[in-house]
Length: 133
Image 1 (cartoon, rainbow, N blue to C red):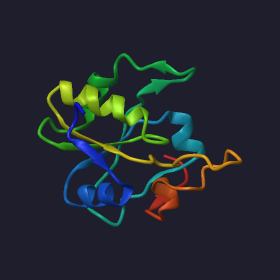
Image 2 (cartoon, helix red, strand yellow; image 1 turned 90 degrees about the vertical axis):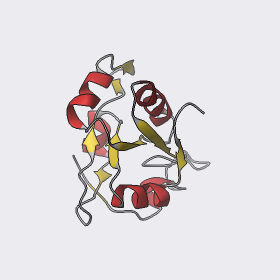
Image 3 (cartoon, rainbow, N blue to C red; image 1 turned 45 degrees about the horizontal axis):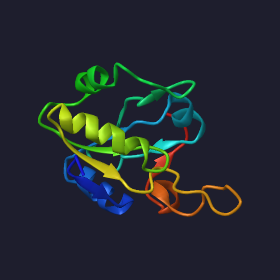
Image 4 (cartoon, rainbow, N blue to C red; image 1 turned 60 degrees about the horizontal axis):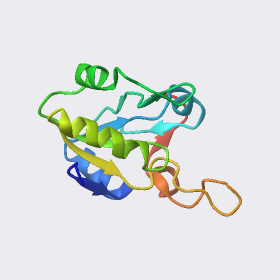
């Protein structure tokens, strides 16, 4: 593992509550259509930096955009849809000098046998979230 570690959604919530910065790396469309973490009950504001752009094209400006919205000394907690893209983001951020964690299960979790994402993940673990970014 080339980043600080994996966290369950509940562990990620606690780490963000303790001062880490939550970075949602899903696409703008996912933020708008699916929802975003709601950290309004704790003194934290999630950051939104796309790992992939529309058409599943890697965002070559990812690190520059990340550095523009997070302090250099911050611990980062990366979140995506299912916990896959956030691994790449955590690895890239670690190489850039950040302490980075990945959220297992992501925001929506894995699909069930019908393809619905109702099994696990941030939303299905009943952590705070809201519609739209």
